[in-house]
Length: 584
Image (cartoon, rainbow, N blue to C red; front, side):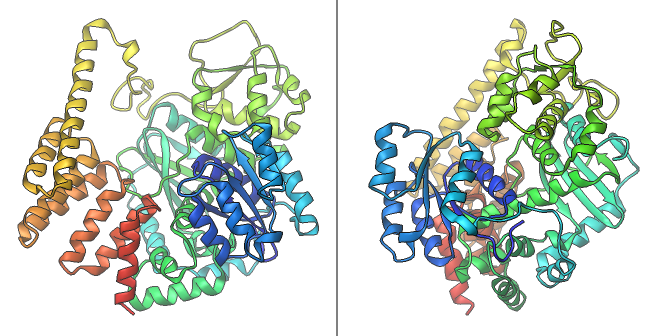
C-alpha cells in the first residue's frame, strides 16, 4: 500500500495485462502508481501530478514513446525525471542505444520484463526515495474513520445492497462450507471446474461480500466494507488527494452526480486512471478474501451477475495465483502442501493460454522448467523464485487445474483432476453435464453434428454482414433502411449486444419526438447492456436519448459508464464536460 511519502511511478502502456502486472508489482514494493494507455494522456498526467519515475512503452496510440519522452524532457521538471523505456517489439541494439543516448532514458527493458531488473533500475535511479518497506496489509487505526468520511453515496448504496442480498439469500445450495475446511482458492477452483454462473456470498463476522461469476470466471464483487469504497481506494493508493476526494463528494451531494464524472471534470483524474482505479477497487475487494482463514461461503447458481462496465479482466487461474501470492504465508503453505517435496509436478493442457500473459519472466521460466520429471523440491532448488513463492506458484496453479502433483512421473493423464478441488457441479454432476457444460470445441464434434455447428457459424456471419451494411447506411443517415438491417441481424443472431444497441439507436433516430419510439429504443439498449455490459456505444446511445428527453441525471450516468468501458470515447467525455458546465 502506498503512503504519503511513496514515490509515484507513471506506467504508460496500451496493454492492460502489462499495466496490471507492472502496477501490482510496483504497488507491492510500496510505490504509488498512475497508468495511462496513450502518449497524450501520459503528458497531461505528468503535467498535473507529481511523478517520480516513468515506465514508457515505445509503441503507443496517438504519439509514440519517443515523442512522449521528448515532450516531457522539454519541461523543467521532466529533465530530471527518470524514464525507463520498455518494448516487446523494438529490441535491437540500435533502438536501445537511441532510447538512452537520444531520448534520455536511464534504461531500456525488453518485454517480458524481469521484475528484479526493474526494481534494481528504479532503486539506482531513485536512491533514498525508493520505498524502504514493501507493501503491507496493515492499516492504521484511523483508516476506518477516514474511509467513513470519504465514502460516497454510491458506496453507501452498495453496503445496503450487500446487506439486503445476504438477508434475502435462499437456503444454502451447491458450493457451501467454511474456509477452515476449504480455503478460498479451492472454492474458486470448484466453481471454475464446472463453469458455474451465479453469486458466491461470503461472511466473516460482520464483513459480507458477494462475488458474481459467469461461466466459472469471477466478474465483479460487492462489499459492505466502506474501507473498500472507490474514493478511499483512490486516496490510499495516491491516485487522488484526500482534499480532492472530499471536494468530489461535496459536489456529488450538491448535484447528485457520480464521483468518476466529477473527478474527471475537476481534472483530478483521467478517464484511463478512472478505469484503472475501478479495476483496482475490484481486485482489492476480491484479494482481501484470500486472507480469510475462517468464514462461511455459499453459492447460489440462481442469481445472474449484474451488468457492470468494469470487470476483473483476469482468468480464474490468474486470480487464484495473485491471491495466494499476496496472502499465503509459510505456515499456510506448509499446511496446504503438506509433504509434497518428493511429488513430481506436471503441466495440464491449456496452461499457456490461461496464464502466460499474467506472469513475469521468472515465473515463465519456472513454468517452462516444469517438465514432469522435476519434483517440488527440485523446483525450489532452481531458485527462480524464493522457496515460499515457488510453493505458492505450485499450489495456486494446481488449484486452478493447470498443474498436478503425482508420485509417478510416468503417469500422464489427459485431463487430471486438480488435487485440491472437487470437480463436481452443484448437484453432484460432472462438469460436462447440464446447463453448465464446457463450451464445445468444433474439432471434437462428431461428424453428424458438424453440419449444424457450421450452419450456426454461417448464421452469425450473415448477421454480421447485415450489421455492417446497416452501419454504412447509418453513417449516411438513412435511419429506416439501417434500422431494418439491424433488425434482420438481431433476428438471425440475437445474442450480440452490439446489434441491439444499434437497433435501438436507429429506432430513436427515426422518430426522436415519439414517446413510444423513445421507450422502444431504450428497451433495445437495455437488452444490449444485459448481453454485453462492456460496450461503450450502448451507454453512449442511452446517454444521447436521455439527454434529448431532458433526463440529465440518467444521461450523465450513461456517459460516465461509456467512459468506464472505453476511456477513449471522446463523444462521452465531451458530453460529460458539457453537462458539468451547464450545472455550474
